[in-house]
Image 1 (cartoon, helix red, strand yellow):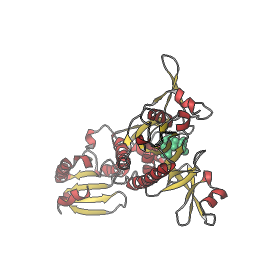
Image 2 (image 1 turned 30 degrees about the vertical axis):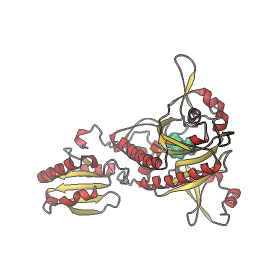
Image 3 (image 1 turned 180 degrees about the vertical axis):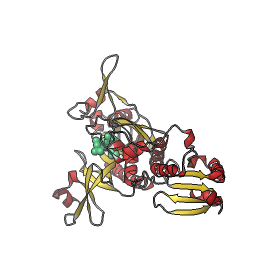
Image 4 (image 1 turned 60 degrees about the vertical axis):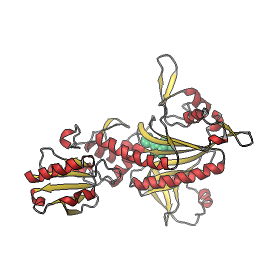
Length: 408
Ligand code: ATP
Ligand code: MG
């Protein structure tokens, strides 16, 4: 991408009402545009980050045999009334709207009810099980506080996966596979400081697990033991739970964290009220066991932005960065060689070919946060080389022009 040819611009100021670091930097660097509190547009660079996050998640979920679907946003209240979740007492974050032909529909805050109902068409026998599906979908939630940039949206992108099983053992087996897939996902996203954390399980399971990334502005509080093997959400941190987990003698520290995902053994929570059943080997009618597994895709982008940024700007881990490098040519020969290099690697390079002073381009490269800055100038050309600076470490190296492709 050539910066002279895209409509995006870096901005000196973030929107006045933007209090969160992630929102401010992403706005200034041209990744997002704030519509209103908790509602953001994703611009070309921001969309690339989202797509990179989705690609990693998709690869890992396909690898454990889940199939991708896309369910509707408009929701029929009848289904949700069966589980009691359309009433404002039970779920107070619904956006509801009126049909011109009369009646009310909701904008999906999550999809347990519709996916359970949908599967009644496809699951009837033990031979149809196990089964797992996932989607990337925009969710709508009328969140009371939406002051954390893209960490908490009223409209946000979620990956939600649902699994269906004949037995509890099979649900447990798949749950353990998902745990491993989630570990791989967060590692590949560069979020290595993410920990599987015990959280409240509700009525049907003792615990659920949240994936919590340690982050000073995170809204959750997590307790962890000295050797960082046990993580417990404050909401369930009590003597009984410590005893349950066999860590009553450990000493625990407290930290702020952001929930980037969660996994849940639902068992019969939705399959029972919605009547999702199957015939087992003995032709007996049984209720389907279910699990659900979420990742906040747009929140993950905000957490990455927030966690790795410094006073100069964003700093993307390589697997999610929109481009590998930001390229700057200086002087006549430098610009020409830079242009040649860009033409060979267009999809990996953001070429700053604008008619600006080098200092302004350097500042923008730091704000926009590609993993490498490559400068080719008449001076570096004297050595037939380019100056390559790592955004993360600030370290600068001279690399020969004919070896430059190796960093991409
Ligand atoms: P939270 O406690 O943060 O409100 P939740 O328990 O409501 O999260 P889920 O309903 O299980 O979360 O949603 C799955 C994932 O979606 C969460 O783990 C989180 O990463 C993300 N998420 C939830 N609410 C939002 C939101 N308003 N904006 C962005 N991401 C969200
Ligand atoms: Mg919530």
